[in-house]
Amino acid sequence: MSRVRIVGGQWRSRLLDVAQAQGLRPTPDRVRETVFNWLGQDLDGQHCLDLFAGTGILGFEAASRGAAGVVLVERDARALDALHKSAKTLQASQVEIVRGDAVRFAQTTPRRFDGVFLDPPYKQGWIERVAPWLDRIVQPGGWLYVEAEAPVTSLGKWHVVRQGHAGQVHFHLMRGSDE
Image (cartoon, rainbow, N blue to C red; front, top):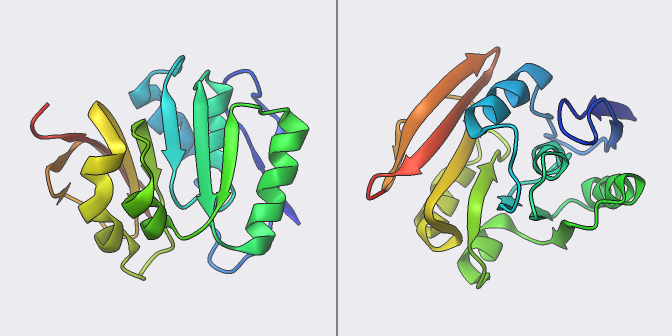
């Protein structure tokens, strides 16, 4: 089993086990450092959603930086087991783990979030499938983080305000155009 390191906040430098699930690729340390610099290191009081949690590293990074609540959505049983172990190890009471399909969750949840991490498996059309539901799950004035295999310029009303590239990872911070 491999491990991934939390890069900032109260759990800085803690290592989390990563399940050997197909298609799992943890967001690199350098990318996470950049993203959380864009967001500001302090996410106190925010509610975040890691929609395709995988390793959960983006959600755990948000919780480490003070997010009041973080929901991790994952469907793979091995990845879920590792997420539960990580949450227990960190005593992350503000982290909720949901077993399920990300698109179905976006379609049906009554909750809205200050920020959503969208880092689905590559080359499977997940971003396009979840895009119609983003407006209903992100609070007005909220943000969207998108990680993809190619640059993303917009998703409906969501437009890129910051972007970067590291290896095969294209990452974007997006805001709604009516904000």
